Length: 148
Image (cartoon, rainbow, N blue to C red; front, side, top):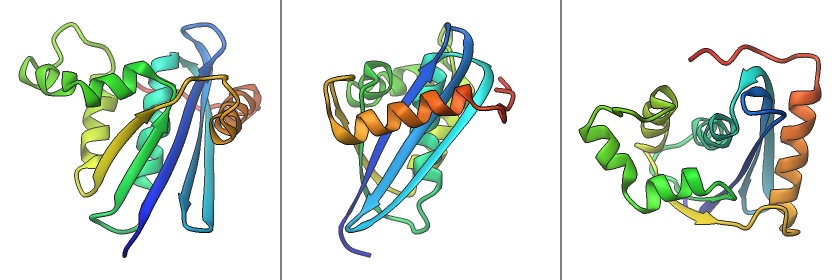
């Protein structure tokens, strides 16, 4: 496969913790897929990270070039500033969301992933769409438990 997959993601939470959801858009050329899910009791950071994970886990081939667009400084800085390596070296001592960060590393491992931070709620069309999907997901009736 040639070309780059764009992964747009957002998470949202009503209360922190509270009901939350994520929205993801995967784009490859003219093809797009959307994913969203709501959770009963979670945090905003978990939903931001879950969005990226679900997007990466949905890619059907290995060695894909993936650019993740996220408005989450938590997610983008953890990767771009190398915090994840320090957290791994200390077995995530004192850090939240170890379960999801380990799942992220598994999902990202077969790909070439880079991150771009977007300013949230600033009119970026895909970010706004992901935010709408995330909010609709946590307002839906089919919320699932976020098992930590």
